[in-house]
Image (cartoon, rainbow, N blue to C red; front, side, top):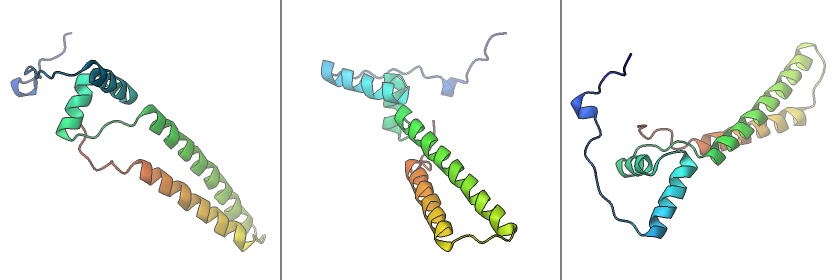
Length: 120
C-alpha cells in the first residue's frame, strides 16, 4: 500500500537557492552531520528557530549522566534500607549522596536547556 499524499500546504515544493563558498558548504555539511541531518534540514531548522536534535556527543553525555544518577539512586536505596532496618547511617554519607545527586541533575537539566523550543 502506498504512502498517503500530503496536503498541498504540507508539501515542501518551494526551493530556495543559496550560494556558498566551498569552505562554507563544507562547514555546513560538517555541522549538519554532527546533528545527523541533511544540510537542507539543518538550514530549515536553524532559520525557522526549530530545536535541533542533540548531537551524538550530547546524547552520549546524557547517557553517562543518566547512568551516574541510576548508580546514585541504588546507593540511596541502600541507605534507606539500612535506616528502615534500624541501623545507623552517618549523616555526612547522606549529605554527600544528596550533593552528588543534585550535581548530576543540574548537569542533566543544563544539557536539556533548549527543551522548550519548538520541534519540527
